Image (cartoon, rainbow, N blue to C red):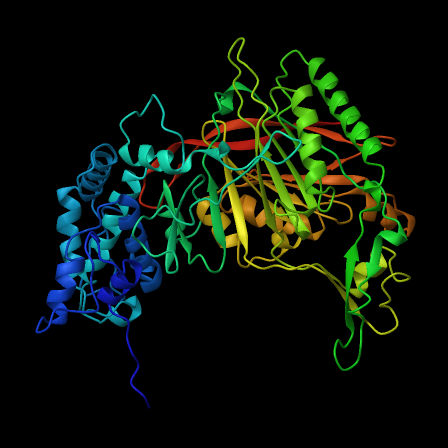
Length: 601
C-alpha cells in the first residue's frame, strides 16, 4: 500500500501564512542555495504574526484541522496524567490569566506580547510533528506541548481582537487594530449612489479580517453570540470567529453605520408586510426550455415566478405606506413606544428599484427607521434571480439631530434552488400549472446560485443581524456552521411558503439556530401560497400565520393576520445576557432579542 502522507504542523502554518509571519520582504522562488528547509522555516515563520487576526487565523487553523480541542480539559484544576489514555491537557487558572493579560495589552499596544513570542517558539519547535491529533496519542505519553501552546495563543489573539468589527468608541479609544480596520473599511457611503434614490450600493467588504493570512485556507470574522453547548472552536472564542475558506461562502461584515442608539434604549419594532397577498396561476410558469423529458430531465423541470402583483406599482406603494402609517399610529398610542425600527418583506416580494423607492418613502415617514429587508427578483447589478436586499440607515436620536436619509444597500443571491416536490405541489394546489401527480415530477426554481455570500450587519451598539432565503434556512450546508461561529443576534428568514406553525419545517430549522448559538429567528412568508393552501382545504381550518418567532428560551410563537389585516407589527425587547466560552471567559456585552408582543394591523 502507498505510504500515507501526514500533514505536519509547519506545513499547516505555511499554508495559512504563505508569505511568512512577517512578510515585508520577498520570499523569492525558494530557499537560499545550501540552506536547509529547517533554516528556511525558521527564517520566514520563526516569529509570531504581527497582527492579532493573523495569529488567530493560524492557531484556529491548527486547532480546527488537527482536532486537538477534543483533548482539551476545560477544568483548570485538571491534572495532566501521562498514564491516562487518551492523553488530555489543560491550562491552569494562572496560565489563562497570563494569556488574557497579554491579549489585553496587545489590544492597546502594537508590539507582539512576549508571552506570544515564547509560545510561538513551541509551535516552531514542533513544525515537523504530525498535525493530526489522533496520531499523537500514545499510551504512557503526555499530550504534545504544542497543543497547549496553540490554545494559549488563540486566547491571546482572541483577547487582542476585542471590539473587532465595531466602531471605535470613546469607551475604548486606544484599540489600534480597530482604528486601522475602521480607516480602511468603515466608509459605507463611499460607493456609488443609485439613481433616483438615497441608496448607496455597499462596497465588497473584507472576506477576512486577517491581513497576511490566506483566505483560501481560512478566514477571520468578528463574533457576536457564543454557543453555550458543545465542545468546538466556536465556543472557545468570544471576539473573533474562524470561518472556512472563502471559496465556499464569502462573508461580508458590514462595518457599522453611525448609530447612537444602544440596545437598552429602545424596543425593536418591526413591520411585517406579507407580499404578495395572492398567487395567481399565471404568475407561476413552466420554463418552456426545461420541461420534464425522459432522456434529459427525467421527472423534473424548471419553473419561474412572474411578479404580476407589481404591475400596479403606484397602488402597491400606497398600500405599503398605508400599512406603515398604521404601524406608526399604533406605536404612537403606546406611552412607552419608540420609533418604528424595521420593515420586512418575504421572498420575491419586490424588485431592487421598487425596494429603493419604498425605502426612501418610508424614511421620510419615520426618521428612526434603522433597516428594511426584502426578497427580490433583481439585485444591485440589475441581474435577475432570487435575492435578498437589505437597507441600513444611520440613526441619531439625540435632541434636534438632523435626519440622514442615506441608506446602505446590499444584495446577495439565494444559496439553494427551491424544489417543488409532488407533495408541495399538491399542498399549494399547483398541479394544473406544474403537473406532478401523474408521473411524480418535481419542479426546480430557475435561479443561478454562483458565489455564495452572506452579509452580517452590525446595528445599534453591539447587535448583529443577517438574513436567509427559504432554502438557505432549510439546508444546513454551507452556511449554518458560519452562523453558529459568528452568532448573529437576529436572523430574518424570507420565505414563499405555507403557514408558519410549530409543526412545520421552518420551526424545526429555526430551533437549531436558536439553540446554538442563541440566535433569535423570525421567519416571514407571503399570503400568496398560503391563500392557495387555504382554498385547497389542506388543513382543517384556514391559516393566516404569515410569520413565526423563535428564540433561545425555547418558545415557538406563530404570528397571524386577523381577517382583513395586511400587516403585523412585532415588538422585540432586548435582554442583557452573559455568554461564556468553554475556558471560562465571559462576554457581558451580549443581547438576546425576545418576543414582547405583536399586533395585526
